[in-house]
Image 1 (cartoon, one colour):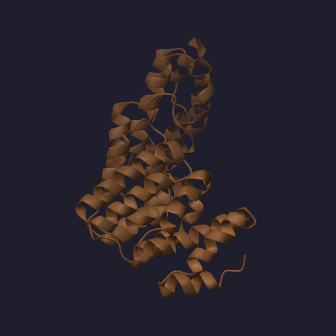
Image 2 (cartoon, one colour):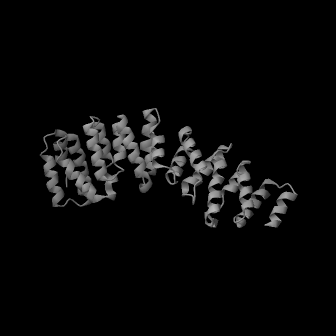
Image 3 (cartoon, helix red, strand yellow):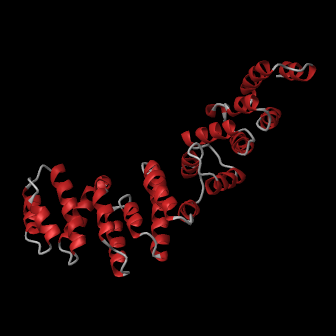
Length: 297
């Protein structure tokens, strides 16, 4: 390490040599001096900033090292070079850091609110979702957009991309649903979000929309398109279908029929599902009854 220090201070290095020098420093991450230089390099020209970013996760044994690694990304995600920011966001979106500096979280939220470029927004959102950032704050950012077209994009595109992160995503989706229902805003978009929640919870929210007079045919259509998302809780989906089958509202019944088709195909149309289908066939609403009669179990 002393040799590396002398090499750096005694002569001006070509950029390629300095990159190799930075990579050599990764063998001495237990020294605070190394982190001081990495933080310095992260603010400099693109080549050095990118080299500093490549610190190996597995080499961070002490908590102070993990904290220093997190702080390293603050100048990277605010770098003057667009390419450096993009690469930093890609790395932050790949996997969670072992620790998160509050300033980094603050920078990511600022990017989420101010940058919608496709090379920024999806990775910024994913980086926040897998971080220690507050779920309600993420939800607030996603629903605070003024134009409903941006809200639709946030849900149909960006939330779809992070929905597989179930444990972290569900609290975010729930907070978004609560806010949008309270505002009486875009109930069909709300219903898109409901399909990523547990079936029992989704059922309660459907009732809430109905009571508030917000439920319309577009809402039913969104749920119908997303019934397969309930697949992680089949018993809950069965219970929700039964509840909707006996509902007095025909739109709710139509959702139930869509769920039954999906459940029936999953279970190869057992006797229970065939009997349920016959109930839908006898429904007074033509959209429910006529559609049920076209189903071939």
